[in-house]
Image (cartoon, rainbow, N blue to C red; front, side, top):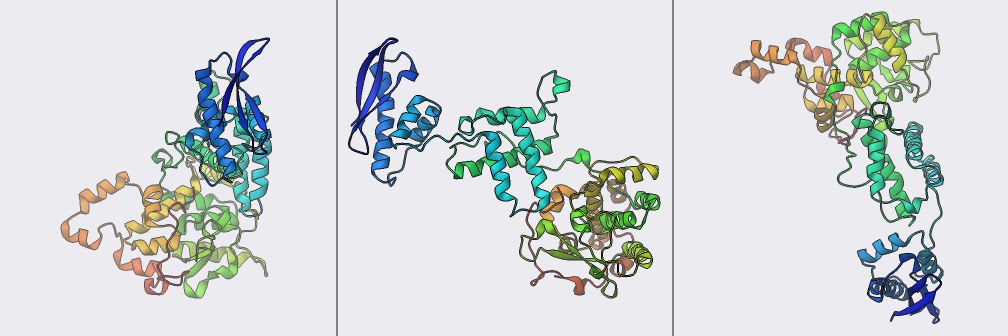
Length: 437
């Protein structure tokens, strides 16, 4: 039973709470940090201390109420919290700083995640430190810090005249807040804090499709870019991106000539992004005529013993977008956002316009129909014109977007043979977010 005692000192009258501690000795907890209070104000604090004592005496079998957990969090950084920790009623306050914890977390996940994942966390690390400072105590974070970080990422310091702000896009801000939430979830699991300021309903972290960044890469534009390519490496990169939707360098860097199965009309693509899913380590895609021609030219001039299809770039984290944009300009075209994502999306749309069944599109490009609908498939201006000129009930039943229906089967190969390639059941399910985002 807690007792409220009145104490006098140079600052006047204060109150304290006395209980019989875990060792059987009387312990006093001062409430001087609360300022001028009366006895009635001290009673709620006495009740919370009683609950903590009962919790420890029961070997933590009696659960703490949420109000008690919140109360303990409010006392962090005060002398009262130090007294509670000394008495064994709460864990000792962790003195970890933001900079120390983020570095510790990144070091802990480095052996288990792909190397290309670490730069994403490093970006979040820089943003958190720029916003809050590396020396901010981890235990001092509160719910309002989530709003502060969200605003910091989105506001443009130059446009608003503020001293802080990065002006990131909505999608980038959402991703980085989500990663910050992951970092702080790990801190909660280690009892370093009890609240995650970056996981709140009003702070969005789900990445939605951005129609403003969509660009359909037509076959005419593809050919112009291909003709402007400086060498066979770049011709292969462009063709692989446009016709089998490789996810940037992560799926190109490990592509070997032995993966090009000329006699079986298909190509094996290693997929690090989906490797953690059963059967997702690789997929097979058809060796489309346009792609075969480019690969055949590159193979014919490759030195004997060459292992990899692309040799100019050998790291999966290399940024090839700048060079690609220069090639686009050389082709007389204007660079567009997300060049490789949009080439992948263009092929996803094209295959569906040809009337290819969804299960084949999913197998060949390595994503499910929900991902395609959300991030890739778009209705374009040409679709309206096509529908207005050709759509009728009989043609609708045949699939009116098939521009050359008789040759579709010849373009894509034997669909029965390719069905289920890369999986045991032929019904492989892919994660919803297995897109190149």
